[in-house]
Image 1 (tube, helix red, strand yellow):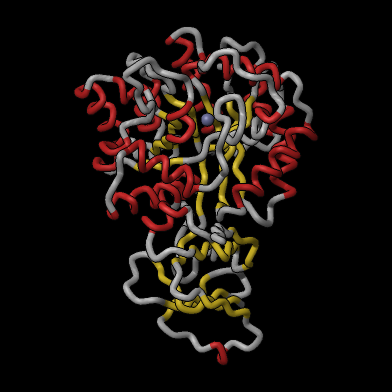
Image 2 (image 1 turned 45 degrees about the horizontal axis):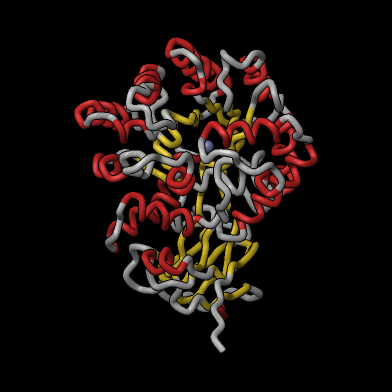
Length: 412
Ligand SMILES: [Zn+2]
């Protein structure tokens, strides 16, 4: 058993004690729980620090993580150049290489307090299923510290990348959990629709969630987002489909965008804006735009919006630490969330909104009976947690302390 004394739970006025049982679930959450009543129980004094559920990161690419440490330099600062760099690297993947980088990336994310992660893995005729095999091995190696979902992701398109259609089905047999998509990678609009149809067909066969990269461009005429949202209503998959990025809607005229957002709301469609990567990737001409979706309007309409890291140190994004408080802070900047109330929106995007994407039917949060995955964060509130990317002295999964993160300044 684990007893956490004197901690501040979000939305609870007084500081509380939390008792976690041997099954790793919350047993009691009360103002005062006596240590002497639970002999042999491990005790933590949280000293009034925040207790929040662990972070959920629903959009990663672990097969590509750290590749820019060894890949060639960019000749141009464009998305097309980033893709070319990744192609060169991908042709040289080995299972061991992918596994080692994925394990390192998982551990980097977990050490900041993330215990549920969804990663894309490229499925195409360059890498075949090598990326998937490597990440499946990493998932097994890290299963005690992280719940990992793997998305079969056709980065290069399905119908203009010969062999990928077959590989997508095979991927679901060999360890992929979620069906991914990238309709914008198809050469023709007709193929983009066919691409979406195939994703739904596979998802229905495997009763799997869908998580596609949607309209990841600054082209106002991209239309896969609304098509996918309407299809999710028609297929009865409300709440089970997520669009990553959803950039082009930000460049569309307001009346069209409003209609699309209304469809998203009806479809209970999840949007994962990955602001950190989008804000840096592909250099605009002036005036520079942020490249992120309509976060504020979507949130105001009640659409479930999350944000995630997306990539760590690859051809698309040189930086990235895996710390949700880092990429959350960048989300706050790009969405221009600048009040205590909106800091809370950002924090929810990193936690409960992401949890709804990860497992729509699963219970999440610090409540009696739930699985005890939580962080103790050395901050009085979420805005300070974000501002300071504060220390996390205890990262707890299923009632076990699995790590800690310390931010330290020393002045002599
Ligand atoms: Zn992505």
